[in-house]
Length: 223
Image 1 (cartoon, rainbow, N blue to C red):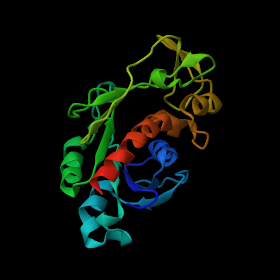
Image 2 (spheres, rainbow, N blue to C red; image 1 turned 45 degrees about the horizontal axis):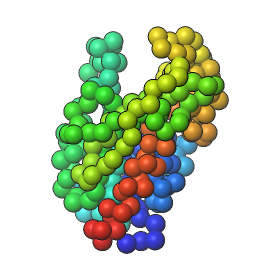
Image 3 (cartoon, one colour; image 1 turned 60 degrees about the vertical axis):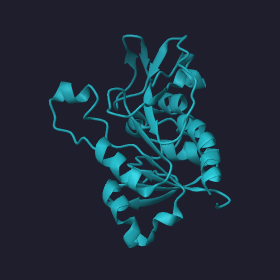
Image 4 (cartoon, rainbow, N blue to C red; image 1 turned 90 degrees about the horizontal axis):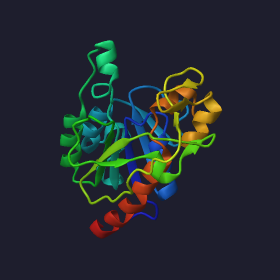
């Protein structure tokens, strides 16, 4: 195994998940169909699933053997309340993503929101990792499906909530207060390089740092 294992970060966005894996000891390559000018590591602009399908054919100069694990965060809108609020037609890519990742034979992580059709997922919450801002806690629940055993702490809801979503300023929520601008959003997620809109979509790095520390031993056992 390489000194620092290499992880492929699919549907990478602005790199919240990537930063957590980097902190855990990975080198990371991100893939997203949209430009991601703030992504903090090596980035390939491409359709994430087409990228995986073409890896064996030396797509873009990368081969499957150059990666030790894969993380994927397919679009979540099809499973969130946004679908019902807007009545939009959003892509459902979890099944296709899982199928392709299983074919690679690599350890993988699939991340999505509550309600997504993940198989035996665990839930990670910012409250259990001490995330928050202004004395309020981050309760951003995210589901994680893996093909290897992952252990996480349960939620530790204790304080008022700080919400990070949308692109506007602060305001009162049902259970707390929305982040008062980009500085507080960045503090809550620990993503100082992101815009407010990017924070709203991001996986907090602390989540994947926790995962990454458990993933590296799995890779070493398989090597």
